Image (cartoon, rainbow, N blue to C red):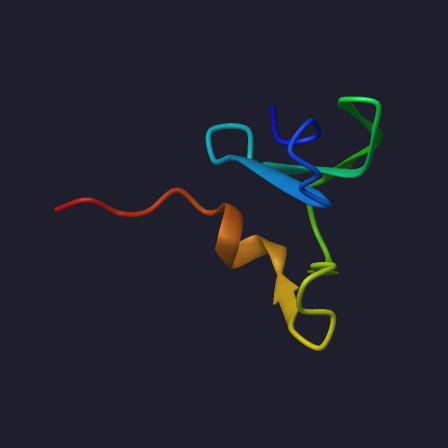
Amino acid sequence: MYAQGGIAEYWVIDVSRQELTVFRDPQNGDFLSRTLWKDGVITSLAFPEVAIALPPLLEIPNHP
């Protein structure tokens, strides 16, 4: 649905597995690029000047 809508980039965070899947390059209703991230620093296509460290993003939040 996102690729069909022309969304350039789509992120899926799986906190239970501590991984981020990034889908990019929508063409013909599907994303041509799929990258799995577990560590490091990533930037989005929309905000390339903003670097996001993955470890804090992927941590399971503490609930009281």
